[in-house]
Image 1 (tube, one colour):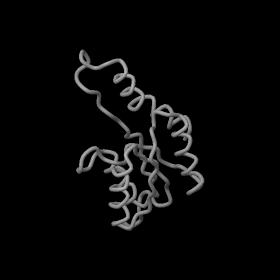
Image 2: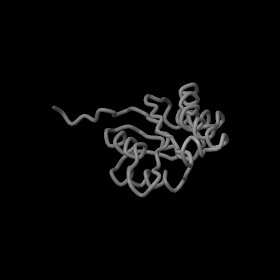
Image 3: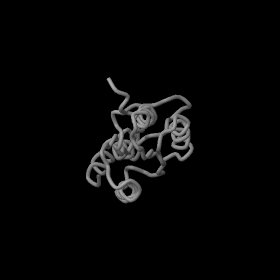
Image 4: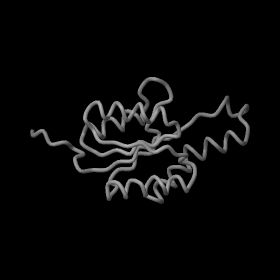
Length: 133
């Protein structure tokens, strides 16, 4: 078997590409592994510091990536993410929707506003990213 990278010449967007804590969440792990396999990765997160940590990990291994700070529950942000990827790399091959949040407390404790925010980030964002990708 050759040493060809499985994602060479591919371009990926990973939403939730930062991590909630100092460890490695699903989004950060996906971004690092995509880059390790040769993909160019747009790391999307609402928290710039978290996205920068993922970027540093990718660059340390010699991968190519950029960050985009965005709220994926907003259509204008999703459109802007895809536009930046197309402007930068000319195409998009992989969309990995990892952005997600948890609500405070159980369903009997959570406010309607908090519930709506969780649904917007965890569900609506997937529709929006897919629509504009």
